[in-house]
Length: 148
Image 1 (cartoon, rainbow, N blue to C red):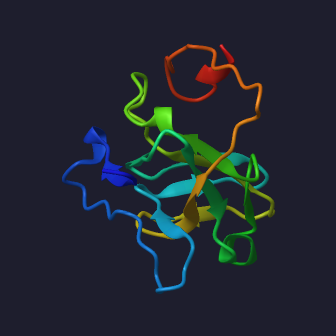
Image 2 (tube, rainbow, N blue to C red):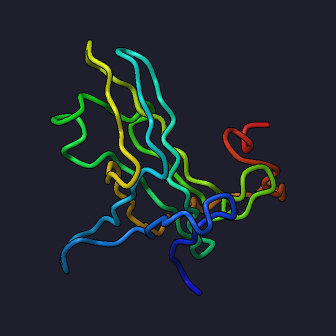
């Protein structure tokens, strides 16, 4: 097993589709919403995907908004790009569930439907500096846990 996606326990048997590339030359794997989420105007909404990603230790999953998200929904990713680290998979606080936060820039309510493709993930290797010194800490949880 080098890299891929799995459905998290909470969403097993709920028809969650694992991300797929839509064409032979697509870089990104399309992620879908696991539930229908309503986002009020000019507020944030968390979109669960029902999936987690596994990868090699020197890789990450970069998650971007699909190009149509802003044009059709007037939504952007709150942090621009989500970075999913290899040790996020199966972490103790949320099993590595990929949940993405959108901001509704419009003055109208936006609905992201369950099964709607709204993001795309690209696996990427990363480099370390010559003087990199690992902290020796293990991930203790989900969001923001590396800063604790």
